Amino acid sequence: MDEDQDRIYVGSKDHILSLNINNISQEPLSVFWPASTIKVEECKMAGKDPTHGCGNFVRVIQTFNRTHLYVCGSGAFSPVCTYLNRGRRSEDQVFMIDSKCESGKGRCSFNPNVNTVSVMINEELFSGMYIDFMGTDAAIFRSLTKRNAVRTDQHNSKWLSEPMFVDAHVIPDGTDPNDAKVYFFFKEKLTDNNRSTKQIHSMIARICPNDTGGQRSLVNKWTTFLKARLVCSVTDEDGPETHFDELEDVFLLETDNPRTTLVYGIFTTSSSVFKGSAVCVYHLSDIQTVFNGPFAHKEGPNHQLISYQGRIPYPRPGTCPGGAFTPNMRTTKDFPDDVVTFIRNHPLMYNSIYPIHRRPLIVRTGTDYKYTKIAVDRVNAADGRYHVLFLGTGRWSKSCYAIKECPAI
Image 1 (cartoon, rainbow, N blue to C red):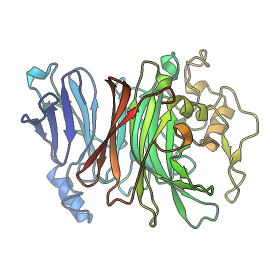
Image 2 (cartoon, rainbow, N blue to C red):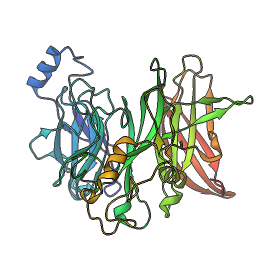
Image 3 (spheres, rainbow, N blue to C red):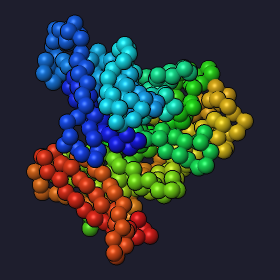
Image 4 (cartoon, rainbow, N blue to C red):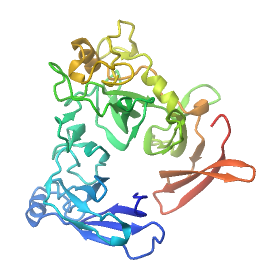
């Protein structure tokens, strides 16, 4: 969405479209951006699907500056990125690629069916994707930077365990801009203590954008990476919880005060017996409380997670350098070794994040579709203010709900 120019940019196979917000049926501006013939042939020879894999599926569209977008595509399982000139004003009707393509590795997934999420901050790209051809190395990565590239600890299931990325947002944390965090929303497959089955959990992870990695440990790796479980469940009358495990989409309803931001999430079930969708809404302040709470600790692979009871090093793991709590630390390379070691082994928070009232806002069961997308608007009516929820499904249908705003919301 480009509100400055009243445009919406859409990525598809081999094309990028620019549509007029005020007249969506108007003929769009279009850029044809296919994968190279050589890469398409190599993709086919590797056994990939010629139609749904061996094209350039555009997965990243980010505003780079006043005149250019930064775009990345799967490039027939060989990711590519480039700069796209959108002009300075909408009436210029400019929409064209005006630079050479560069490698998209670490910026876009090879497989177009594997989601890539990204956010651009000060001309630096933060991405959640799979970094290799085989789709085994998941990473949260900072690239397109004049500083060093930084990523999650490689092949460390404590950090990421077969994640499926959903969305990413930069969110302020207090008044100091150095304390802002990039939040990644995803679901991951976690092995239980019996190591026989894998369960899907929805998660939120966050990192500091100014993280440059450790000095001796976690070199070029995040030293501020933390994650917490996101719960959306219904408690039955006899006590047990029915979990909607799979996060499908999120929407941030922002306010003047970042701490009162609401995070709306769509969840579905992974059960083969029970099918359903739910919408849960979370206070950002509750999310931040969990990240400021106890860390999870595990004595061994067959032990249960417990709350860490040992000494917490200073500065508290997950704190951003140069912020309100660390004004004299200008870089993460100044962090003491015990801080870096602690976060490498304790990236998970002990408490889970629960929605407002600890229950879903909307539950839908017994249907042949599931909710997949959400957008929320705040509107005024004669009898008060409402949150209007627009819910998309996987069957070319949609639902709309109006939830009255009250002090509890």
